[in-house]
View 1 (cartoon, one colour):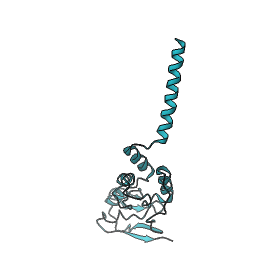
View 2 (tube, helix red, strand yellow; view 1 turned 135 degrees about the horizontal axis):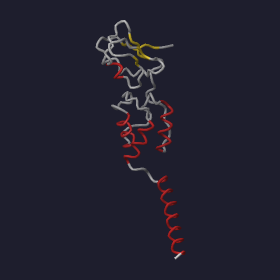
View 3 (spheres, rainbow, N blue to C red; view 1 turned 90 degrees about the vertical axis):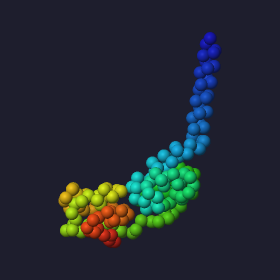
View 4 (cartoon, rainbow, N blue to C red; view 1 turned 60 degrees about the vertical axis):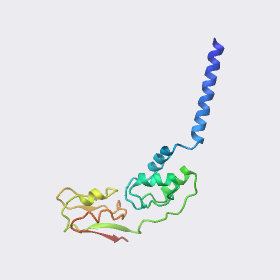
Length: 161
């Protein structure tokens, strides 16, 4: 009886070790790899990569339809992490973010409508309903997504020093 218990315990241990090893070595299911890629992306949903958000871009990378170097907000760090995850060579950033470009609100014309704030993928715009808004320059990626929804055209892009 003791021999049978020890034998089953040994078989279970060996099976566990084999499963753990193969889980790390075998490719992940397609949906799992999309999730893992999506987790590495910055979740700014800025569309600077040419896709409407981070999840569609992750799907395109997983399907082999997009290179790993199209995410300006993620920068070189994200490209390196994606390359490591996918076993690829890191590539230089395809479309680097505009150098020193940030959005600026003409606060005297701002009506506090919240349209720009809601459009900002990185929460770089602060302000309350019916009050003036402003942009936190250190957080702004220069993605331009706040410009179009502004009903009074009080936002423009400027180069910083």
